[in-house]
Amino acid sequence: MERRVVFGGKLLPYLLVAPQLAVTLVFFFWPAAEAVYFSTQQQDAFGLSTLFVGFENFTSLFADPDYLHAFKVTALFSVAVTALAMLPALLLAVMADRVVRFAAVYKTALMLPYAVAPAIAGVLWLFLFAPGVGVLANALRWAGIDWNFLLDGNQALALVIVAAAWKQLSYNFLFFLAGLQAIPKSLLEAAAIDGAGGWHRFRTIVLPLLSPTTFFLFVVDVVYAFFETFGVIHAVTGGGPSKATEILIYKVYYDGVVGLDLGGSSAQSVVLMIIVIALTAVQFRYVERRVHY
Image (cartoon, rainbow, N blue to C red):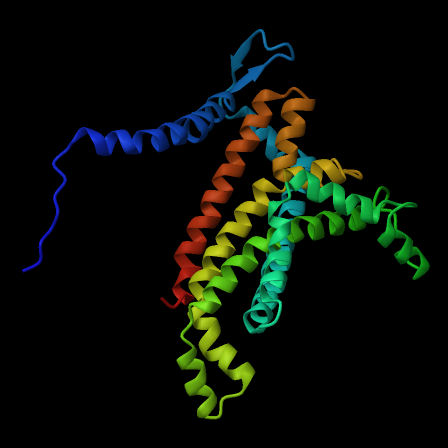
């Protein structure tokens, strides 16, 4: 007969959960509620008075060509960052899973970028590609490529995509490696005995068993591209040149802090929050169907 331990205390469980609930309320729900409130207000530049304007801030947003441009930049940026952060991480994890000699050194070196703050990661790539003084920038010039991301918007966008993906690559690598090591080796050995080649084993055994990890990282990387890449863009391009790298989260900051448009900035943050919630819901609704647990 199975015995179950029943905890008789009623107050202690609530006290243990209370710190996390307080953090969630103070740093998530409270700011979200304030953003919704201020999105319906119009405030003067000095913050002395506010006027209720309803949905006027939202209608002004979607009539603004700069905001629609930020939408397009964010879509391209998030797709590119997610792809570049996941595919090389999976390749490196597969290689690390096979390394025997100096495996600890190899894995530690690949995890180091995750310990770097986004702004620092942006500065590192800025030094490498700075026109005139950057090592890689000079190499591109010697190869005949006219590199100057301060003037070329496409080059600036490519630079921040690479910097942001490099920052997230270590996180993805760590989870992919853990997922690969959790796959029973007996399955791969049995497939090899049956004559399945390396690519066939990877496609029919490894990828399906790795799909929960892949799905989790896909959701995390999309959220990362929308929110946590602000430091990279702020340090490298500041949204320029000519708003070529101004994604939605950076526009929220620029319009609210620099432009002092608190109502419009709050409306943008509400729209951004709705977009991320909708994307996450779609991912769980449709993408998770292909996940094999």
